[in-house]
Amino acid sequence: MISVRDFGATASDGSDDTAAITKAIAAGSSVYFPPGRYHYTGRMTLPASRAFRIYGDGPGVSSILFTGPNAGIYAPSINDNTLNIDGLTLTALTAAAGTAISATFNRGDFAKIRTATIQNVEIRGSNRTGNSGGYWTNGIYLYKAPNSVIDKVVIEGNVDITETGIQWSSPDATATTGIFLTSTEIKFCKSAVVTSGWVEGFYMSG
Image (cartoon, rainbow, N blue to C red; front, side, top):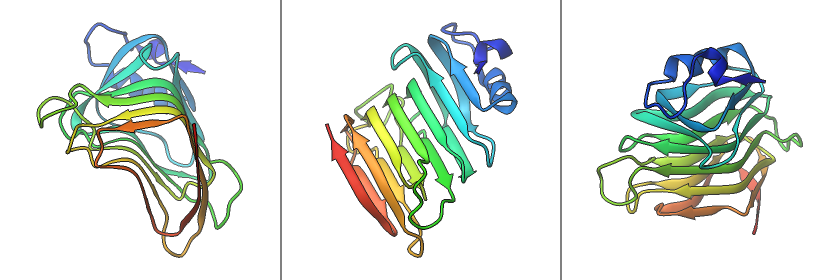
């Protein structure tokens, strides 16, 4: 486990923690955000082909505040590995800040191994009405991510502006099966859940 504070991030003082957090991500595969608010500018890109976990002590306790029009946690090539994000609030401070969590996997047809687990996470902006202030364009985007779990997640968009809460996609030629959505609240988004391509097996409860 690596704490962002070990690399110089300082909580709740208003300073930019981008450099410290980037160093922590490069150094390990399990990065911890202790209680407090951390400021990050731009897109937090995770290393390719590596299982990764980003976690804190709970929504409203450990928060990452993103600035910039192309922000959020971005995992462009997790491939055959897993991604776990839990115990965090992800706040957009900029209008149309992009997608809060975006991850691309490369599992084969009908894969049985879990890919993404996102739990105890709050995704919100600094403003929920109008086109000023901060808001996410999209909440969560998962591509080729079978057997994914989204649990105890709150996605709060901006009325009439935020496009989707959750988008789950796959190419037409590859079957992506199984997404489990439990105890999750999506509000102020044009579309709550969107699927595209060959996806099947959507389970919702709570």
